[in-house]
Length: 321
Image 1 (cartoon, rainbow, N blue to C red):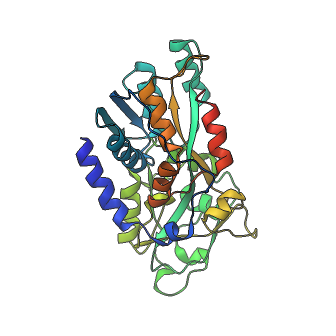
Image 2 (cartoon, rainbow, N blue to C red; image 1 turned 45 degrees about the vertical axis):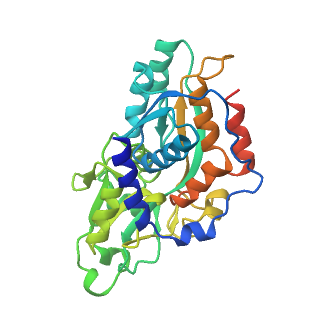
């Protein structure tokens, strides 16, 4: 399972647009990983599809340092992480959204304390169009008008590219929408932030993973879809966004994530069960320390996501104590 997932992630990574990695540099103040003694055993990760490639590459790097660690990774959606942590079938619960209060309550019923959340990377949740689509930008108001049937942002329904100002052969073409299924944290984040908690249209083509969303958009000139920026390929283009119609437009760049001008920037997390005042199991703690090291954040950049700053890393490391 692990070898297969590494191959899959490698094939996906080859297609990621390289420009992102060339522009983004990991904070020089982030420390290199210092291996610890006595790290061995089994490590299971169940959760986010958006984080699946990152988890796979982190696991590969971690195993090089600790050959006696056996790691299994499953990425079917953020909503699968809390039940896995509660049941004890995984020690790591990667999520592309924060846990809901109901999920935290269920966790607390089992353990008697709340789960610990560790931020491991930054992401621009991108709205992708086909690389040959000329649209210059979109507001989240328009995104809501495209994807939602309830239009909580107040706009009129949008069904063709011509309604968005696109001319030529695309103008009369129906907009083909690609999205994630409800198990996905990306689905939940997009629903909350882009659709103001409104309902998706029934015509949105729900996909089991981020890669298939991007693949669908790359093959369809009239398509639009949403996914973490780490799944960008040469066949699609991330549309610059603004929150409100007429507002300042921002591209999905690292600088715009840090200054919060990009309206759909987010933290990506790993949740763990850490009893207050007690250390995590050594293999779990060291894996998290590896993700928050210079080596771990270099992998974040190579996979197309944005690295944490040294200050953010420092804040996350405090949660491990």
